[in-house]
Length: 422
Length: 150
Image 1 (cartoon, one colour):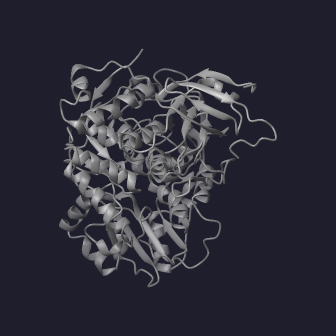
Image 2 (cartoon, chains in turn blue, red; image 1 turned 30 degrees about the vertical axis):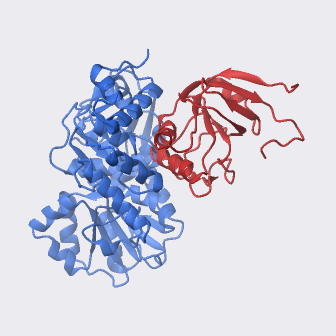
Image 3 (cartoon, rainbow over the protein chains, first blue to last red; image 1 turned 90 degrees about the vertical axis):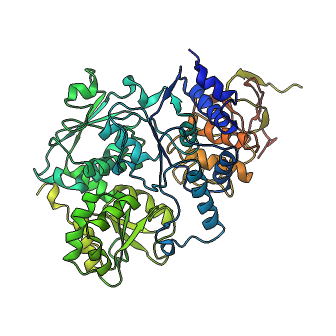
């Protein structure tokens, strides 16, 4: 079967809606052909990763679209950039990259995208409803949309994201289709202390394991308590989409397409069942931690993906009760919309008093924010621990949020995973 | 011409003509984190071709791997003149296609992307490969002692 475009698609391709829409449709159609899609689908929204500056080609592409008059056809949010526009001094990026990064951000804004600058668009109002087709880029957002919201997005990235937003169309393929959303590998939790699944770090570590061991299959998690909160599912997805290429996880008893194991598997037998116990998560913590973390701790970074309001609700009293070590810089990354809400709630005074560096619009591992002399950092994020060592040339230690705060006070890494089985 | 060449019918994802020496990668390569745009050097420490360059080569591999950001890295390589001449794959890969397509749309270098199924395995590293606009791939094996494209 070959790709069948509808009349509207062909009008776009023919340039009847302008040259930018024609360019965008050429790219969407070529991607559909490559994937063997038979048709395109309407989307209700898009989340764009292409606004992060990587080099001159990405900027040229955005500039070409804007000079051709591109406008997005669906509500569209923007992922993180390389800059913090609210605290510009926090990013050490030098010109010309700095000004080019700013131009790239401006280009995407001028196409009608909302300047949300967050990797957690699911924390914004108006998020997609169950069953809606969207085009989301950014791996943690993709897995959250599919897993937690039950919205449908394939694994999109730079270039195709804005083309889908401009045309309002995506190839009918991948995770847009029922048959590709069924689970095929089961992870069975066993041997944990009853309280362990109530720790966010449990889910981050489990995500790391699930990503490493799922390959191209769709994972199904059984044996967790029902009603796992969104922050924990965020940690699960971000970990799995970093160590692997996971785009959808069924957590039986929590996520909308997995009321039961049978639902998650669509009545088919699973290909494999993998038992996961405390030692697997200890192993994950070791994989997410550098060989030697006994030295002086200089950096703690939390909020990857961006910290939610409920994340601030947990962190705020911990910080109020702690004095951060003078040699430690404590970073909290979040979205500007969440920051505004946290400010309105009156919680930011504790952060100012403790000297916490709040970072918005970007993240501490994708652009130079940390002290370049820092050698050792701690995080509660499996994603940060996975990417930061290579990106920043730093050694990372993974721990719980509580351990991060305790370590920040002590000026050295303190970790305890006894809660897994003790 | 006495060299024993052979041809295969490929399916162009991005049609175009190119010719040059093959860089055969037995395992998939993620451009993101695997190739340095400034040099076209393969930098993935886990990849068997680490230290070789994609620049000026017809890259032959089973399929792409990893992050969708590989589109961006391939595009930046092509923009910097450090990218491959063409990419031959066993199975379609939208992520690599996208990087090549965007550069083409911007009027930059043309890097054809062709799917050729199991025939990719017959291409030897350093063989001379010509890709035609219709997807036909012509391969002339590298003659021993005549280090083509090395």
